[in-house]
Length: 199
Length: 193
Image (cartoon, rainbow over all chains, first blue to last red; front, side, top):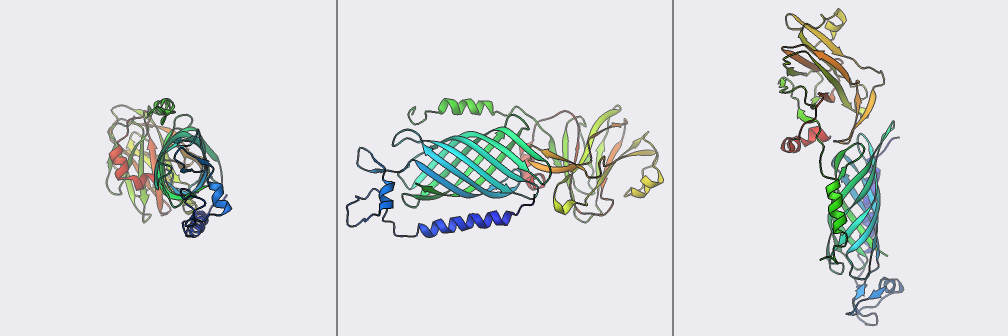
């Protein structure tokens, strides 16, 4: 199996560029503006974002988020992408999210394929700056054109911050540290720039 | 706080599970022309070096107080560019077999007076591939072999007989020791890439 890291980088930059173009539209979709306000016209799609209201009448965003990002693994040097699906658990205002994620990162010696499930606490969800921390389980696969190596039973901890562009889109950096405590033990460190979409 | 951190007990439990109870190789960097002195050959070590011009010579000094069986292997990062990079290592010391003509022709320099030699061979032509879990890297290995080092002044030579350039790692030892994180971070490029 041959891999080509630049292709992964091009894809990531392409997706990021498309998202940025999409978000360059006038920011009239802020759901905290009244839907009937002439200053804040909404479309059907924007209305769909406003799924629930809290006690103050402010909008509560959709519980679902997907992210994609360009990632670099610093232990086992490799570059590529990781995609995430986040599901807010609990009612409006809950910080708790279920996180499902998978990625593919290519390096000079191997292709790193992480897949995992975990918990993320995302704070200040209605604000522009949304820090988060998380923890969970990851399965690691290291592929070459010969043998395939796996490091199962890894635990990860993550730290990051999402910056909301509008109600649907966000961008930000994240850092995750992992440790394989069963199987072939060892540490891992990844850094990532992501773009998120609520839907 | 408990409402905001409903999973705090789980988080703490997972951190406890993940606590580092493991010790690994002592990684160090080899420089050509600067003999590396091994303080305790029983401690597992990984010595990283690189042939920039292909004619470098690396030397490791060991001084066992008694004959010592020591597993030794030579690793090369598994990259397309290193397909033909096959450095060799040899153990030089008193009481070891005298070199054959073929071995002498391989050596980068003359043996010291009275010293014998054991050359670490590649056990498989296609070279075994291993995964190193602490640095998450893939290496070719010549195959781990336990050599009996004599007591006294023993040297391990590493050179590139074909003049190929590229990285290598000399691994040896048995017992695992603690990590010097400061040294690891200061030489991160040598270990990680």
